[in-house]
Image 1 (tube, helix red, strand yellow):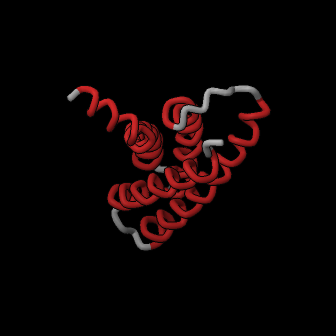
Image 2 (cartoon, one colour; image 1 turned 135 degrees about the horizontal axis):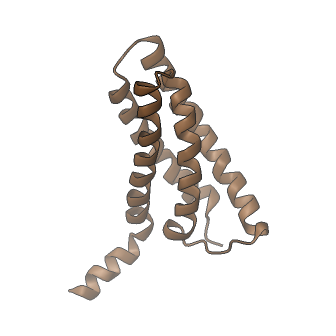
Length: 138
C-alpha cells in the first residue's frame, strides 16, 4: 500500500508539488496585491504588477529545486533558466494585468473575483511553460 502511494506521488510529483508551491506563490501574490489595492488604494493594475514581481521571485526560488528538481545553481544554468522563467512569467503577467485592467479598472467588476479567476488561468499557463520551456529534462 505504501509502496503504491509512494509510486503515485513520484509519478505525479511535478503536478503535486507545483500545485502546492503554486498555491504558496498565489498566497504571496495576494498578500502583496490586496494591501496595495485595498489599504494603500493603488490601482488594481499597479497593485497587480507589484504583486507579480514579488510572486515571480518567490516562484523561481521554490519551483527550481522543489518542483522541477533543478539543483544546479551555477550561473551558466541559472542565467538561461531564469531568463526563460521570467520571460514566460512576463507573458502570463501581461495577460493577467490586461484582464485585471479591463475587468476591474475599466469595467469596475469585482477585484477579488477577477483576481481569483486570472490566478487560476495564470497558474495553468505557468505550469505548462515551466514544464515545457524552462526546466525541461535533458
